Length: 302
Image 1: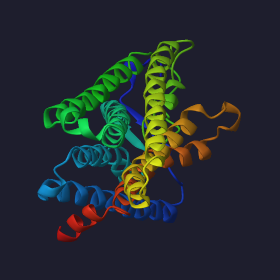
Image 2: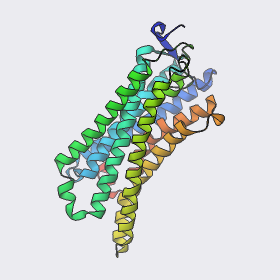
Image 3: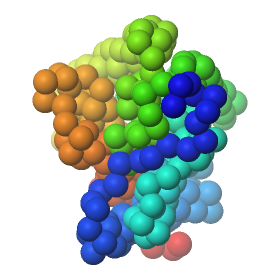
Image 4: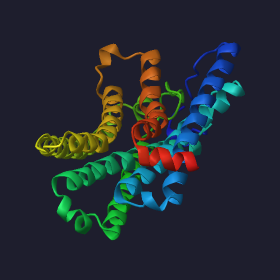
């Protein structure tokens, strides 16, 4: 294929060429997908229906569940359909949509996790100002900013990636349309524009990461000063789920995109992609509800 204008579809990487293993992959992904939908769906419903959970922390958690719901729905259903129907194809427009939605939901989630770190910082380090700093209008603005940042990242990366000439076939070595794999199809040196955009995104992501780290350093410093053991336990129970979600999200994405090329292989890239695109949206509801009695009570009512 001479250039991207002649492309009508891409061929995704299958999990297996054996029919039985393809069906096994479909069943496993179906179970994971249903678990993610049920977990995030229950949290969304519980927070929306229980007036006791109409607080900033749960408002942000509801937004996080919506983003997780969207991110796993972007990649897993298409992979399941390909395994079920024994095909590898995804349309050119479908691939563009996948890239856009992945960056939209993942970019929005990372921004929202940064906002949630600020919420925990204000709740523990500046409790007397919490009502003023985290009013309903402020929370809506911060959540909207997180969604908007994801949208801007998605527009930037999607437009830049698919404006690059693709002249090395149409086989994407991943189970969904992932930018690093698409760039391998680009003509010589044409991918450098996307690399420059990725560097800018990485710098912004690093700033958010430093903000989260600094917030938690101050949070843990304040918690250790609490004289009551019960108070320390309550403060830790408020922060540890968020910290676990941040660690899971950041570690899997960083390993996926920053691992040395020397250890890269199609099978390893496939496993890593599953880790950062499928595992966090599935586990986040479990992490947040595991030790949260208020949320557990609301979930029982649902």
